[in-house]
Length: 112
Image (cartoon, rainbow, N blue to C red; front, side, top):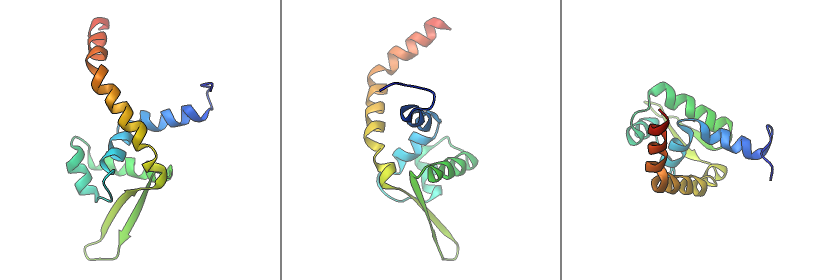
């Protein structure tokens, strides 16, 4: 596989390069969640950033939005099968970060 400007591997890397995409996908791994629950679980994400991230993930076909006709209105987000297919690679990336994060931070400090 070649990594070219318009290849599918680059598309996948671009999806995960966003600060919040992988975090939100991982937070949805146990099932549908309301935005307020996601914000609490994730921590450090603003309402605006979460809303934009969920919209982008929905646009890419990785999450679905379900609106309930209740008072007050309720919305839940869930992974699609396509989104679920990213959980394995996300877990592998997290394991890599856990094993090598100290080395990366040490290298960054040496360069700074």
